[in-house]
Length: 366
Image: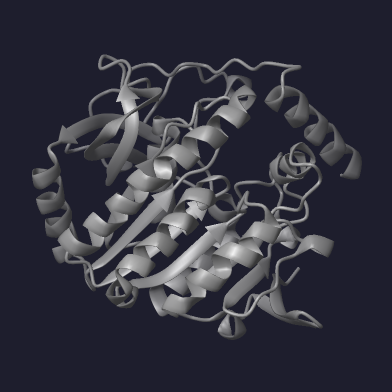
């Protein structure tokens, strides 16, 4: 396994920073969903994005990586009935699958754009029919296309049995491993837009319980936006119930010194998932002069008052161990208990408490 991880890290390093390239199979046009089709479930996810429209004729290439003013809408994604928790089923060549099939794959079907006023009316309506006026906002990380973000959001809320409105904010990531530094610039640029969007959601959605989840590089924008929002509108803290930071690709020293002290002032529970086997974060650490990332575990694990740090190293099994928050059943179950039961780490049976001189953290039981 160690040799496998080293090879994977080398490949990621080469691809991210100029020594290799990858090709991605373009999906075929999905068939239109039928009301009588019971082989899959349609999941509508709301979106806001500051990506420019690139190709209106192709749902998978609709939004590109250029910057633009924020636009809004709803994406319709199908989940197959035999979907396995944690999987983002796609056509695979080794199964001789060359076209998308909604009976087998998670598919982005349609993108419906909406004017801002109409969008927030629709969002408020969706929140209103949920059991507890719940709303979840997801901010994706590096190397993610708009369609990737739409499919991932639908898969997560389906696996989490989330009853409320699901929203993702898609900043202009290039969706290419070679574009790491370009994504760094764009996620910083998007922060102001994300802050404004969060403010609009709190004020216009009528949501009573808002849950924030960010992954990888997306944490850079979400954490800063959250701090800005709470500074200017401290009364919003009562609406945001949980903040979940998955594999944050943030300088750990900056995170500890500048970000967490401001975030904890709102008294909103913060959960941080970290792993010592996260290959993209290992590469990021090397790129950033060896400085640890906030999503590192092991000797670099971040343990701070006001943050429930969960070491997820034990559960990682993917090729890169970077998307464990949405792919590994133990982590999905852990997030389920946070969202549905507001359970703290000390009460979740799947976790073991670890005491250190810096404080307490938790890790998944083997």
